Length: 170
Image (cartoon, rainbow, N blue to C red; front, side, top):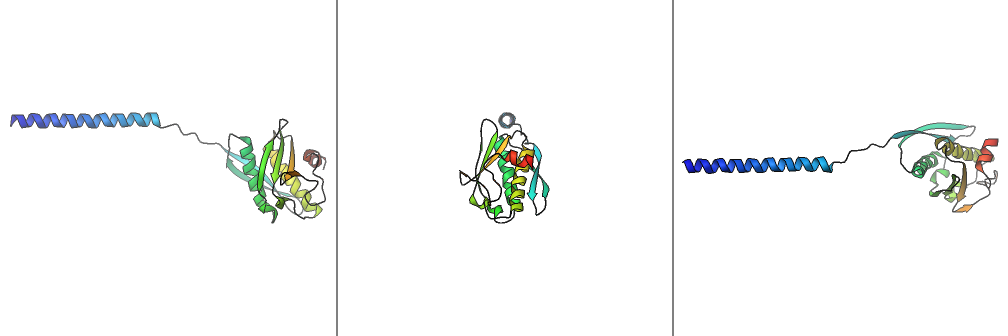
């Protein structure tokens, strides 16, 4: 009976030791493998939406991305969805930034559709104001349609030159 007692006692000690060893091993793996979670900051953006007589303001909250052009693209996507049809079907084909912080926005042909002079003006103004007020580093904005520079969106207002000059003089 003494031998059985000693064998059971040794077995219990060995099993307890194995359990304790694997518990500590698992605890240490968690301590090293868990990376601290960094939450992205949520930022408030203003979107200006054209109406028949003025611009309406809408606030949106988005997670701020480290890459500025990604933030700009997200805001531009929301802006385009707020526009009336067929403008709201416009696709972003590309967004480019040059050394002088001039932004080139390449949009699908839906953005250059027939509108009255007033509608065209408010669409251009709302686009300019939405991007310029949310991204102070932008010096100017150039609109491209299907990767080409165009004279006007609907035949009324010239967008060949600087949008900055056009919007800040009016």
